[in-house]
Image (cartoon, rainbow, N blue to C red):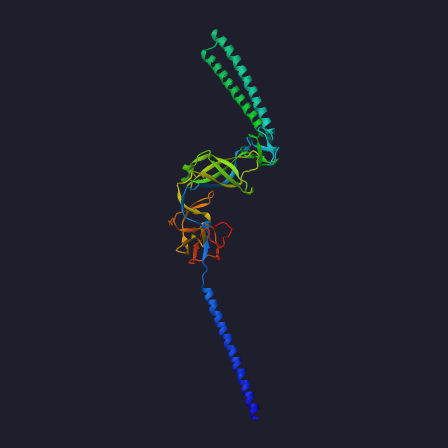
Length: 393
């Protein structure tokens, strides 16, 4: 019996020893794995860049463009106004109608004008009769004066009466002419060929003298009215080409040129109005459309610049990524003019001429990370930065 108990104790002790050994082995294995993981995390991968991915600051002339924007307006337009007061008897056009020069646009009621003309004609006839009588009296008095039947004063008086009557006739003739002109002015005609932009009155309305009736615009030639800083005006001249983009026409561009430059700045500003003419034979462009564009200026003197893809902006800061002493570094820079055609940006910050700058946009870059430029004949690197195909910010 005692031998059986002894064996049981021995077996139990062995099982305990085995369990403790297994637990100790598992703990040791986990410690080794953690140490290995820590070692892997501390290892930094060296980024390799091809020579084509890098650039250096270079002195190159940059194209210069002056941005302009503003509202389009027709070169020729006119608002036809009433030359007489009265009731609008007829309006012959509506908005959008094409009209010719001299075409009737509106008629004002002429009943009062016709009556006034008749009145003026009656006054003219009366004045003519008075003149005829005065002329006969003067002729008679002239004979009597020769026969000494009347005094010189009496003759002078009759001559004066005739002159007065003659003046009355001339005045009456002028009044008749005015009444005839008023009758003609009751019919409003278009002063130019174009399109009706606005009809200001309706048939049956009463209008006063000089009240607007119809606005007509000629869309054959249209112009952009742009405000340009006065400091840029010396570089502008009439005839310079302007490329314009108009809202609503997508990527389409319209060619124009500077037609006129205002001689004075706008009140309260330091800007001067520049008028850019745009041919519009097809009448596609309309008044009031917004357009923006740029004017090509003379190329600037050579300036230090980098490819636009090398310049990045984040958090209100402008910087470039560069390789300095085998590490990635961020260099803050101040930029200037941007040449869209060559894709370069002026760098006003002094950078070493030998500094290798990343010319393309890369993601997941960290300052201080090991970096080098691989030789042209080397094999592809095990780990390299991957460019992101998008425009630089």
